[in-house]
Length: 216
Image (cartoon, rainbow, N blue to C red; front, side):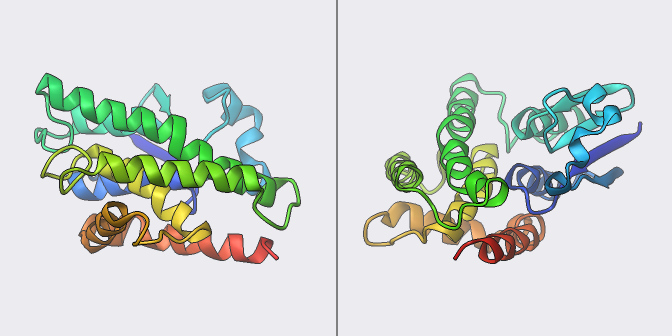
């Protein structure tokens, strides 16, 4: 087995995979840095493996998969015997999958709308449209949190993937605990988890510093 994760530490999707690795105690992974700000994801060799030229990307011997959610599910279902983060019970797994799609289709869309113009297009502020997307993302997530965690009373993959994105959004637009009390308390609980401290916090600090250097 040769597992290789191509990554950029500041990337929220990369950080979600880091948290999975930490939470599930998966070892033996080789890490390769890909500086997307310098275009290293556009080399011929990288594009041959991943035409979408994204990070993270996982290579397991001759098998290649990208997208943080797909990578996380692959790692949990192949390299662990514990199904607590991604239970096999159909209804609970369906809810987790729904939250993962929510992360891709709503949370990360809001983050990308705010960050891409700043990092890649020379903008010095967040657009009103992007701010509205972030507000909608916060409102919806707050409504989902009827229990302690996003899917019931135990941490699952849903929390790990969503907190990577939401903690990044929080660096752009701090979560108002009066408007979004459930979301604010959930983020605090996530921040107390060891996998968050090891897998998310260091890269989040890099992400925050990068944004501050670009924003006026």
